[in-house]
Length: 321
Ligand SMILES: Cc1cc2nc3c(=O)[nH]c(=O)nc-3n(C[C@H](O)[C@H](O)[C@H](O)COP(=O)(O)O)c2cc1C
Image (cartoon, rainbow, N blue to C red; front, side, top):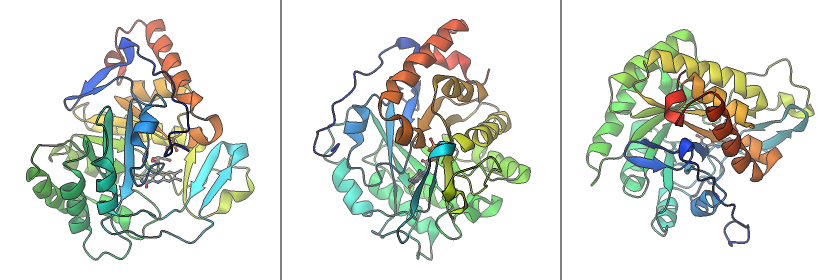
């Protein structure tokens, strides 16, 4: 429906209190669409038209791949959550590049990069993504936090991460125009992992962190029948752990990186909590399943009201407070 232009757009919330600028890009509001919804870059403009302040496509892997066998996506309705083990199903870099090149280029669109399941060289896969989509996207994301590609999350370790960022930085430096590079991390990280990532990130060309991907933890509060399915859990139960990680990463990086807060946002209060924990920008996905696109305007309007209530003149003033 979105692809065919059959979904009516929503008037964007154009409130200057929500507007901010990062990496030379203007964000009319802080709420973005998280990766995984538009894996192939087919509807970024249609989703910007739903009122999102920015859209992230992907994850895109160098070669097309089918992902895991179905069923691979489960609703946990009573828990307002989702479990997925999609496994980077996507049409590959050439297809996504073909879609992005056709865009009318209004609004911020980032590209989230993955590696092929059977690739022997992760660094080469991410570098290929930077080279192919870098010229077409406004920012790039190295996603090493999906639980559904074997071995992927091990790249978050100190030395693998250093090597990965080093390799990707070479591809980044060769782009015709420099593009911001972000790293998307998992919520299931030890205190040592967190400190290592912060240290490596601050000593690298990274411009920001996306905190966080889905969790492999299963909180005891879950009640839905599908709670034991393998995969990454997102939605409401992810809010508290992903926000705690966000606050940790904000402290550990001393506010020197731009953080995107994602995980369980479904209300203006939760969006505001992420901002105060250290996020400059936000993303959501799972809440759309239960709330529909009307959620986007509702969260933005509510967030503006909360900022005014607390005496902030602009969203940037509330970051990390
Ligand atoms: C069905 C589904 C597919 C996803 N695919 C990706 C992906 O390809 N790459 C990625 O970085 N994150 C992916 N995610 C994770 C989301 O981008 C987001 O980090 C996570 O769902 C937490 O946000 P939420 O609670 O608002 O959904 C996916 C999530 C879902 C539910």
